Image (cartoon, rainbow over all chains, first blue to last red; front, side, top):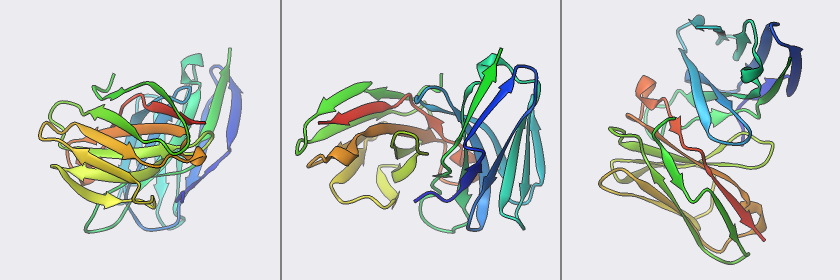
Length: 114
Length: 115
């Protein structure tokens, strides 16, 4: 079963605009990660934010985390056509033993129009 | 490129058959995780191997099994294939099991179609 829900399911914007995607999750987490997937192929890790962090930046990416609301957002600034992809948030549950598996949401399909 | 390679790229099987998918992890990575991604869905965790032992399993039946070898490469075996097994199977390797060492590097996947 999926832990998280992503919103919106699909987003279409013009090149140069900013894109914001949101993710909500259900259980306490160790960290939350965002991944990108092009055309149903492998996923590429974008950024990791720990449960004790509130905001993180990487290039044109900005991620926020609100553990009280169990939510995160990914902002992509100055979007480019190459940013067209599906974006997934993945949580790592806060467990002591066993696999620190990634629990993915259903993803947001982002389309950047030239 | 993540350095994680999966084979084959595509596979077509019929219901009831068995299939083996292979994954070579990135150099220096001792942990391999397998995920199933149905069309239009996010990946779902199947199981994880750490230093050749299963280190956790998702909600998949026993006909899904795996192996990890001394060089940390891995196999996913699925017996008695069902139509619902049609999906993209993703392998991911990581430096370890926890924290930032658990950042997972994915292969391009194997697309399995069961007819």
